[in-house]
Length: 231
Image 1 (cartoon, rainbow, N blue to C red):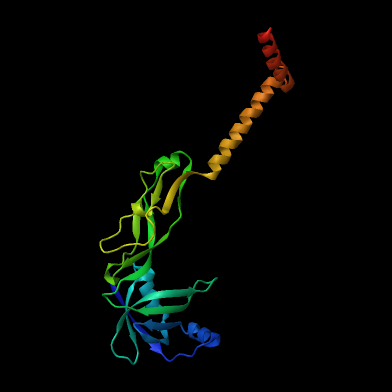
Image 2 (image 1 turned 60 degrees about the vertical axis):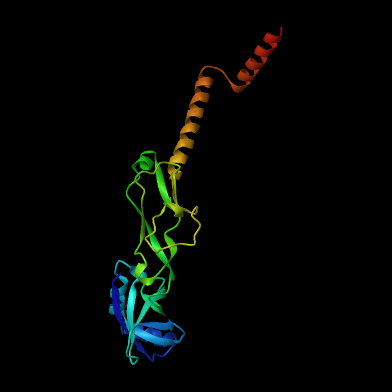
């Protein structure tokens, strides 16, 4: 996994007003912690941070982080990131310092590939219930994503965590029978089938009515038949 170089500036003021001023200057408030160190309030340049986030690794990118005034850099990942609810700009970032030989628990995207033609031809759809899977891996082994080909799925099929192929050195504590995705008949198809059955029933009743046979006649006819059998 490629590493991104990022420089953080310490000594920022905390508080809402200060944070707003920093964002106006294209700076992002952040904190750095981990490896037994005290938490340090810093700022990072938005353009540099954006470069780190748009790699294939996304939020799990390995970052070669240098805090100005400290000299040497440290390996870090983004542990948490807060975005504005409307503009979706990054409001705050938590950087966690890590060791290369220390296993981490991180959330990795689960991506469904291919087209389930058999499902679509039967008016169904594939519903994904797990989009992020928590895995354990050394920093260098963290996958960008986990993929599964749904091309062969049929209505009623499910994909579980156990069906996913994890790269060498990567594990998960999630139970293997947890459902990742399932192929089901769509709600629209179910409603259409119910409506079709209702229309068919109404058509049958209309035919009986036109023939002069009512529900009472049918009941009497059935009763008369029983009496005739008994006689």
